[in-house]
Each structure stands twice: as C-alpha cells, then as structure tokens.
Amino acid sequence: MRSLIAVAVLAWAMPAAAQDGWTVAQRVRLPDASQPLDLAPLASLDEDVVRVRLVGSYSFGVDGSEIDAMARTVNGTRDVTAGPFVVLPPGSRVIEEDPAAHRYTVEIPRAATMPISFNILGLATRHLMTLSEASANLVGAIEVEHLVPPPPPPTPTERAARAAQGVPTLAWVGGGAGGFFLLGLGFAMARRRRDPIQELLRRARRANEAIAREVVAAGPAYDPVAASAERLLEAARQHVEHHGAIDRALARTASMASKSRREMLVKRDDARVELETVVVRLEDTATQLAGRNADSSKAREVDALVRALDIDLGAAVEAEEELAR
Image (cartoon, rainbow, N blue to C red; front, side):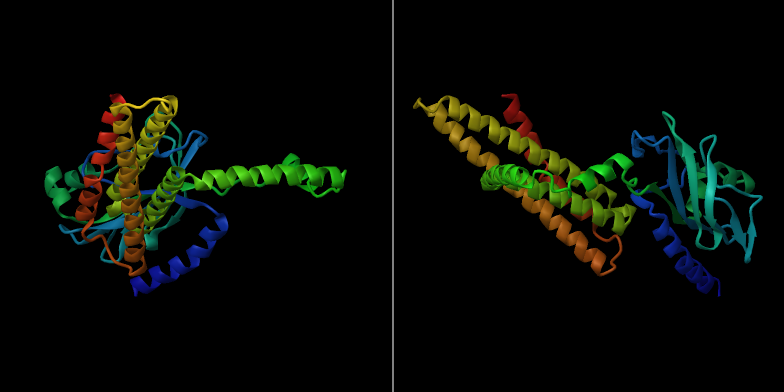
C-alpha cells in the first residue's frame, strides 16, 4: 500500500517539477560515513543560493527503520524528532518536501565551502554503536541532485532587437550586404569543415556531452565514466594542439629538405591517429551508455568500462611529452 501511495505522489509531483523548469545538472551520492560532501565545486559563479534535492533513503538493519534526509519511519510511523539525518550548512532551508517519496528540495546560501553529511554519529550514538557498526547496518543511498533554473526570459531590449530584425528598412541594401556576409560565412564554414582535425575535435566534444547526459540518467555509479571522458577530451585537445604546432613548424620550413622535417611529418600523422583513437573511444562509450539506459540496466561492469577508458589516457601523457620537447 505504501508503495502505491509513493507512486501516486511521484506521478503528481513530476508535472509540477516540469512546470517549475528546474533541471538536474549534477547528481552525486552522499557518503554514508562521517566524511562530508562539499557542494561548493558543483555551484556556478552566478549562484548566490544553491538549490539541491535530497533523494532516497536507507534501511537500518538494527531496528528495521527507514531513514531519509529529514526523518525515520518505524513500523509505518514517521518520526521527525530523530532527524534531520543530513547535516546542512547554516542558513539552509527546505522549500519543498515529499516524505512519501523521500525527496526534499533545499536552498543553501553560497559560501566558500558548503559541506553536507549524513549524521552517522547521531545514529551510532542513539544505538550505542561505533560509526563503522552503524554504517555497516545501512542499506540504500541518499543522492544529492544539483538543480539549475531555466534560462531567463529575454529582456525588453533583446525583444526590441529581435523585433527590429524583421523591419524591412533599406531591404535591398541590407539584403545585398547580408548575402555577401552569408556567402563569406558559408565559405569560412566550408573551409573549416574541410579541416579533418577540427572535425575530429568537434566529434570528441559531442561525444563527451552525450556521455555527460547519459551518466546523469544512469546514476552516480557511472560518475567515474564521465570523469574519464573529460580527461579523454582534454587528451583530444592536446593532440589537436600538437598537430597544429607541427603543421606550423612544417609551414615555416617548407623550403627546406632535411631528415628532421621528414620526422615531423611522421609525428604529425601519429598525432592524428592518436586523436582518431580517442574520438572513437568517446563515441563508443557514449553509444554503450545510451544502450544501457535504453535497456534500463543497472550499474554493472562500471569498473571495467572505466579501466577501458583509462587505457586510452596514455594518449594524453604522450601528447604532453611531445609538446614539452
């Protein structure tokens, strides 16, 4: 019966969340031991107040209670006097709560450090246990979702500028100038598209963005995959810089014939091959994650996937060594 109520509450709450427009930018698991989680690195510079959502609960094996961020439930009775079980920074306030679904939206004032932690000490003290014993009896998880607002509506100035774009003042002159501009822009874009190195870098960026989206959907168990993908993207950027540096060196020595110049040609080809390898790995990882999410699979073989990504990180090290020489 309780599960049916929780499903009904979730179904009612989801449209409200969609209307609100706030979206999940990052999702991390709250450590169930005594170490805190600092939210400051997650927040952007323009956030004076950081909004997070605490989702999930633990089952405590000692007394069979269910513990979420704010209270515990024993034999169907919710006890708020024992909580809260998530310690928040000073000035924090709960603005939305759904106890049945164990979801609490909290606003936290921006600070240099913003630690939150699970109150394992209070739980252990209550039952006269050590911290490790209390932690060993917890099954489940509480996740922290960093929420970001929808983009702001256009200002009156922006709306006026958009409206002015439709006014046909000096249409012939403007149209002719616009035609030349578009022609030049198309020529520049065509040249850029012909650059295979820049196209490889664009593919790497798109694949990394796809991996980040799929990791958010898959859950915090896949966070290491997103971190490794970021490092691979940085390796791709370094290979592009290395390739460009060799290209410029070859251009400066175009009139010369030497063994060193032939060696630079080989190194340039090697940089491109390594870049292609990184791009293929990123795209393959994004595809694998999308397939896992489509099948509603859980976090299986995550370590193997991360290890496979880390193998390719040697490309980043090689690029750095080449650039340093």
